[in-house]
Length: 323
Image (cartoon, rainbow, N blue to C red; front, side, top):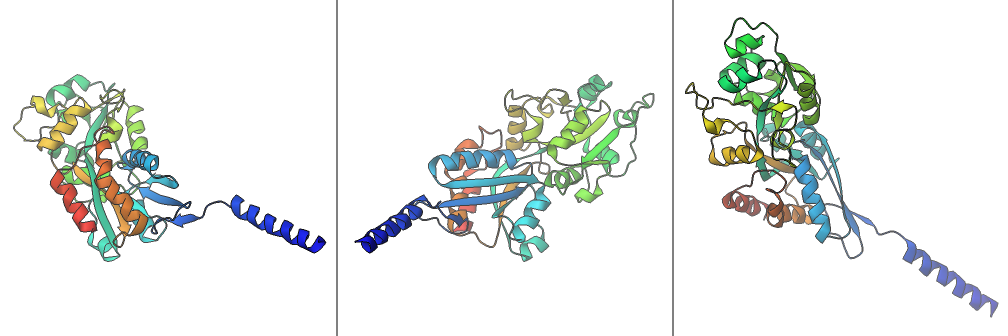
């Protein structure tokens, strides 16, 4: 009887231990079974970071047991991390290059935004900046060639001798590449200026410097709460059509105006561009399920999050490429 009782106690202990054991954490590339958890690891572009956080929150609401580990670091980090197997998906705010594609990078466009020229609202010449605007050629002479060094150079007034304080991204950034191409360059490396890490860091540098100039993604320069340019900053008008006149549609004082300009093409590409989630090889399992959800159900949250929706044709093309 004592042996039977001992066996029963041992069996009960095994059963209790099994019940108390935590659910297994399934790799994101595999579909989780009942009671299992899966974690998606993502890194990369600050441009896509806020949108991806929103996607994650909504996805978790309908997919119990799913977790996300999302970090910034710039588009370059997003690509290098996913190709190294350190993450499931990279967030990328530029087109992939041939070398990245050759290594297996597989891009999926999920939304659209743009990059904007930014100055400090306390700039001593802000009224003249808003009245005259700037051209992409002039911005190229600030960031690319260094020919324009003073605010007088930029505004066409030789009596103004105060220097322009030029800031740029120090991390590998899709925003920097797009801005460089917008003003006549080819790559991020063409941009001169004081290097600052990350989108929020670049914005803060300009906010701290009345003579500073920078560039920021849509989601950082326009407040989601107010729909206006963040306090302390200004998005000056750019003479996009080079007719020598700043027209009403070239003033982008609100997020709504910026989005409409991107959708209509009045604000060109670059610096408007698609934003991508990138996998190593064609995605499968839970990663594929997540991407299909983003391209379908997830699109309901794009405008709410302050991003620019893709067209139905663009979305269907991405879905077809995944299947």
